[in-house]
Length: 414
Image (cartoon, rainbow, N blue to C red):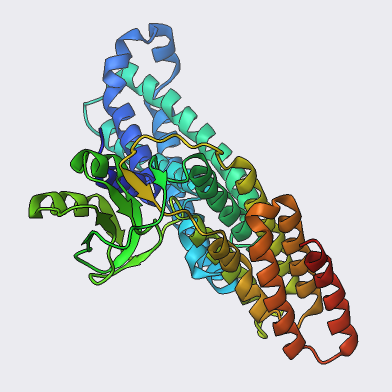
């Protein structure tokens, strides 16, 4: 079984900007090295038809053009990241860097350039015979076709790259994945429950955000010891805040093995932390509501996105999740925290804008009606708070009365 630390490294490597170009370059070099192996299967008539000049000209054209195209594409991508960070939020930049269309285009350009350079070097030596050059010719045609297809897709992507709506879509996708994973396994294979007042606490040995927890390793290490997980992914840890509480004393070796099951990093991630996705969406709305931007439409879009995400999460919540580790108790994810992450700061920054406040009240009412038991109390509390903020910020009595009428619909549904 792959450890959680190795899996984390592999996941970050696959999503890194350099990984796909390096992979495409390796494939290109491997194709060139294997050309003499394939050469004996090339018909003699085909060898006579295609000469050295045709192969060299194709490779020379690729070498002269693809490097410039790759550098230009990287510049466009870097500029769009800066625009997105300024218009939306810097926390969305990792998601934009993982855009597969952009990565595939840049990887194709760099891989094609390396293919052409290595091929030209090979042609200048005696490594390739006439049949091998035929293989290079057809491989060059495949590379050209891949470059053309990547260019077409890349041009289509440029129209929305770095746009705020594109950022919201990617944040929605990432948050939906984290919420769906939580809904399938809300207690990570353990039992729901809060920490007992007494026990032996396990503390982290460094500062940082909890990225993920290797629950199977914790269960194996303390198989017969009742445990309670005190933190969930996304929590900020320090050596004074306990992570785990055990019913009995943990020796030094067991404590070290349990501590190693907690992956702590400098930043929060979207993969196992649904609260982070909602927070970043809220940041996009707050940026849009700033006086320098003044874009309430984006904030309204974010409210609708967050309402849809939370509604789908409530629909997907497993009524009886599988219990794989009965000795482990896990505190439930707070619905109040989720709701506050999604809407509280929009209510604060949009307090003086009636259209934003009305959409917020409607969204809270939608969630309360969708699942009264799950969202009702938190929605009503946020509704009252948003109304109080708006009453202090709005000057026109008609606006305040209009908003109070909207909030009253949620209050009467209590």
